[in-house]
Every structure is written in C-alpha cells, then in structure tokens.
Image 1: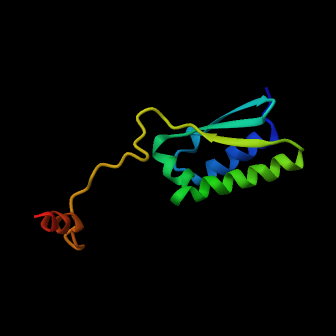
Image 2: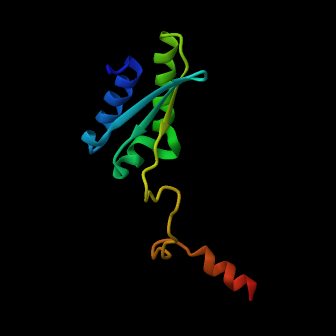
Image 3: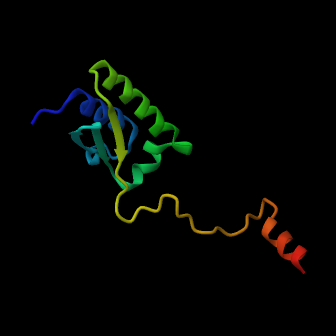
Amino acid sequence: MAMEQDQEFVEYLVKALVDHPTDVKTERTVDEMGVLITLHLNPEDMGQVIGRQGQTAKSIRTLLRVVGAKRKSRVNLKIHEPEGSTRGRREPSAPSSQGHDIASDIDEFKL
C-alpha cells in the first residue's frame, strides 16, 4: 500500500530530527473524524520529537494541519509512548550543591 502525502511528510520530518531514523514508523487510519497518523519511534528519541514543553510536537501538528487543509481533510498526530517510557515520571533528585535547598528550609520552618 502506498503512503499518503501526509504520512510521508511526518516520516520525512521526524527522521530528520531523531538519532535513530530507522526506528521511525507511522500508521495511518481514516475514520469519520479525519485522518490519524500514529508515530512510533525509539524511546531515546521521544524528547527530541516532543521538545521543550511540547513545542516541537505542537509545531509538527500545526504543519500537518496545513498539509491536511491543502487536501481538505483533518489530520491529527498521535505520538505513541513506548512501553517502559519514563516521560513525566522523574525520580526525585539529590539537592544541588550549587543551589539552595528549599526543602530543608521548609523542614526547619516546621520545627
């Protein structure tokens, strides 16, 4: 089955951003809501595709809307979160030796 323009565009764009371009795969499904492109990639590349505060992913979605509008269709992007991903689940870090430890100030205030 030949890839559609919107799906090719996503693969081309994401492969240019990531460190593991051979792991980039897309799935395209069409329903009454429009087109959904699901992006699968290497877990190490998630941060590069999402970007700071989601700005890169938001930009990719904006460009996809333009591609879809050109063809009079609604195109959405879903970034598949791989099994075992740690996105959004940070472990508490040790206090920095350079910065001020606010937690110790709070504990002292409670005394």
